[in-house]
Length: 119
Length: 173
Length: 103
Image (cartoon, rainbow over all chains, first blue to last red; front, side):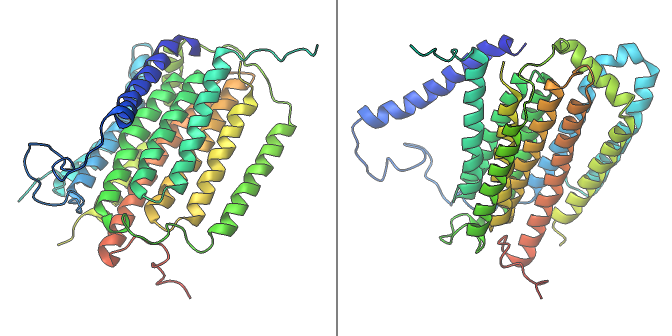
């Protein structure tokens, strides 16, 4: 039942509420004073040497693609694993082509060098 | 003394909260001037929809929604925004010339759907469903029996999407 | 119990918002995000009709929704790869400027 998840909802609301509280309260109560040191990302840290808002290499996107593919694989594997014991060979036969097809995609991306970093 | 309407139940309150949260963040997605803020609003919307799935007792779908949409698709969109950064801090309007007409059209579509949905006496209560574990098992059975063709085709589609996306996104030099 | 109408209205709102975004936004990635909103609207409807239908033991609605989630992932991957590829060629993702095929 959905009501079973009420504690989870209360946790989410409490967490979000606390997060909002510690952001809002200092903004209202704290003294406001601005100087250049305060605007730095890391106070007393390493001085930033370039803008973080530059273009990222496309490799990140390729890795994210791999993540997406296997994410979806897990979505389909989970209900399948729940019935593997009951359906036995039948479930294995049904899953094998799916896994093989995705394996082909994985090997393709591997061979294309999407996983090589640097060089 | 007129009779007061019945107090809302907990599930109605929670539903209202999730529905308002989802709709507000959906508006944020389409109205945000900064594309990155739009992407964050999209994550909020997808979370809200996952909450609605839990309310509908489709827990597996809620988990899938968080895993695939929030975990993977939102990540891809964020990466794509970072890869095509130049637009983000532009001072030009994020909307094209036809936004006025389109807005009117979208509002009309919503009002039409509102009228249509409101005019039909839908069921107020739902029959009981299976327990969580047996529902996931039943889904597994569906995927390897009735919907096995769709399932295998989905594998093929993912392969094609992966190969196509790698071909398109890779640097050719 | 929440009436089915509530879920359908949320779906209708998400669909309308997505429609507006897909037609009115200039940035190609924003258009793609709006399309994700519309897919989610369809999914909410599928799951809501499954839940309030006469036979919830028949899981067709949920199976469809899972397939749509996977489909949306594939669509987002290819669409974003296309946008990245276009950006590399033209240095823009503004759909108004991508008018080579306009007559």
